[in-house]
Each structure stands twice: as structure tokens, then as C-alpha cells.
Image (cartoon, rainbow, N blue to C red; front, side, top):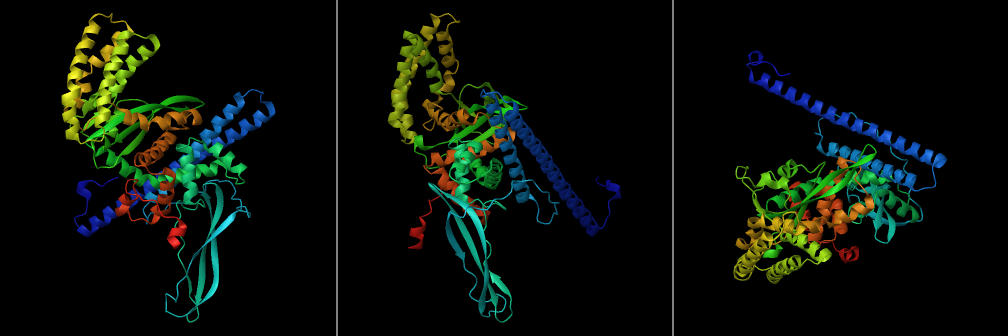
Length: 534
């Protein structure tokens, strides 16, 4: 509790000491809070492990022949892996964020026994040479021995073990021992190499393989990796990569125009599933010849409330291409700070409503509406990649007359239809949003559709069929972080797995002020080992 003003000392040095004491107390309290949260997470993790073990034993003894019990076990294993990922991420984040001078009482998290790496695996010996002379006195050195640290690495198609050898030398003069410093590791106290970590991350979020399936695949290849071990790696790697994820997000909202969309994500909650959301915001200036690199920022929320995009875009005030979701409406208000976002509607959404009626019912009005809208898209294909000025000129000459005719025609058809028909609702969807739909005619930077955001979410939609659900809200947030990196790599024609492997290998030793060098659009694939040796 802070002292009352009248009781504060007048002496400056005493006041400084008081401030320092309060600051130290606050840091100690924060450390204790982090420790308490971690211990709570560990207790929850142990509970889930016991639940899974009990469920397996019951299934072995009493389980029916149907697949229901197997599906339940798969769900429990997914939930357990998610909890372990979260525990590893929290532990890594606490280590990265804790002040160096703040003592934090250590705690032990129960982990599976570390098995020796198979002796028949190929081994690559990397020698870190010691100093040529004694760093203390400059005397001659004689070899004393070496320390060998093994890390398991994955190269597509085969496994190998890399032995990092640090030779020891002792000085003939002063007998001091010298040795090369230990190489940094992508994650603390882990023995997975950066290539293996990248493979596990991409397999889960890029190839949509849950960890229990990956574990089974690796076992068939002769490598026993428990799901809990893989979960530890995923959580720690995600926490390590977080600075890059934040830089990508800042780059997206610095654009003058973005695409926005969201998709449902099933989330496990107390034995049942509820629906969370994954939001994506895409920056892509290539359609109008912009030079800034494209990127995608993903966010997770437990529901679809409008407060979530308001938080994601708190500092953004440009144009946003999106669907007609009502939760975006407050972003378009004039009184919004730092300014209103300009609404740009999506013609693909309006066309889709007519297309479904044309395909299912062969409605002549719907068929004609699709034909007219397709003519507008044909113009866009002709000017894709041209400068904003060129696009604007072509739209005014070719697209504006067609849109004027389309508006008149839609209004005439709507007057003949009952308000209760599906065709009338499809026409109303477009006419009610006409100013936002036609806004692209006055700005060459804007697109006709929001397809950029929908393409970014395609991988999530595919993945849902494989991993079924996120194990928790923390798992959803972690998925959003990894999707941010994978999709940004794809937008910049970069192999996500190669990028992850190289960045994980370099990030620990990379200066924070040069973090931009590691972003996908600035990254260059390292040459093969043979080329480096040559």
C-alpha cells in the first residue's frame, strides 16, 4: 500500500529508495503471480492426464466395439496436447519476460522420460573449435577432451542426429580450461533441431495433422516422440516466435486498405464443443501494383462479438473490404477514434446469392444478374496489377456505365417480386449496400471482392475436417499466431517450413533491432551446405 502524501519523506535519496523498494516488491509480486498461474496450469494438466489414462483403461476393459469410444479418446488426447502446448508456451514466455534480477522459485513439470536417441540413426558431427591460445594468458593449449550435445533433426525424407562437439583445451601455462561457447538452441532445454520444430509446426497448422497423428507417423519411422513432447515443442516455439508475429500484425494495420473476414472454429469446453472465431486481416497491394509486401494477421476470439474487430483494428483508419457482418458497423461510424474506417462491400458475396438461385432453380433473373456481375469481374481481370490511376480510368470508362445499368435493372426486377421470395432478398442484399459496393469505382486501390481474405481462411476450413476442434481458447490463440506466419509466407511465395526452420535457428542470436531482416518478405533461403562449404 502506498504511503499517504503527508507521511512521505522530504529527502530525495530516501524517496528514491522508497520507489526502488516498491518497484522491487511489485516485480516480486508479478513473479509470484506468474508462478501461481503456471502451477495452476500444471495441476490442470495432471488432471487431464489422469482422465485420459482412466478413459483408456475403462475402454480396454469395458469398451464397446463401436467407434464412439475411440473418438472420445482422440478428443481427450487432442485436449491434453492443447493443454501441454499452453503450459510450454506460458513457461517459455515467463522465461523470456522475467527480469534478470528477479528471483523466481523454480518448479518441476512432470515430463516423459527422455529416451536415448536410436544408435542406428545417421549422425552429423559439427565441431565448434576451441581457441588457438589461452584467452587468459595467451599460453599454448593442449586438448583436454570434449562435450557432446545431441539434437534430433528432421530433414524431409530421413532423420539424423547432429552432434554439436565443443572441444576442451587446457593451458600449459596457467592450466585454465577453454572451450567454445555452447550453440544457442531454438527452445530452452529442448533437443529438437530447428528443422524438426518447423516440420512439427507446419504439419499441424499447414498440413493439418494433429499431434497424436504425427506421433504415430514418427513411431512407424522408428522415432518414439510422445504427444506431450511434441506439445511442449509447439508451445515453446510459438512463444519464441511471438515477436515476429507482432511485427507482421503491425505491418498489416499500417496499410491504407485491408481485407477482413472470419470463420467459425469448434472449441472443446467441458466435454462438449462451442464455437470460437478466427479473424483474418490481409494486406495485399499487388492488385494495384503496390510495392509494399503482402501479409495476413490472424486473431482468435471465443465468440463473434463486434468488440473483437474493434480491438484488433483499434489504431486503423483506412478502407476495409469485408462482408456485411453487423459487428463491423461501429468501425464505420464518424465519431470513431482515430477515425472512421471506410466500408467497401464485396461483389462476390452479392453474386453468390444470385449464383445459388441460378444453379439450383435456374431462375432467369438470377442467371442474368450473374452474367452482368461477371462482366464487371472480367474488367477487373484485365486491369489486375495495373497502377491505381490506370485502374481508376478504366473503371470510369467501362465499369461505371455497366453498374448504372445494373442498378436500374435490379430495381425494376425488385418492383415485380414479393418481398418474401429468395430472389427479392438477394436483390435487396445488393441494393441496400449499393454505396459500399460501388465505392471501388472512385479509388483505384480498392478491389471488387473480398476474395483475398477468403483465400487466407481456406487453410483453416480444410484443417477443421482433420483436427476437429481447438482444445481451448489458448489453443485457438496459438493457432492464430502460427497461421499468421504460414499464410504470410504463402503470400510472399516463401516456403513456410524452410522459413520457420531458418528463423528458429537464428532468432535466439538475432539482434532485436534487426528483426525485420527475418520477416518473410525480407528473408532469403540459405544456400545448401555444399554451396556454403565451397
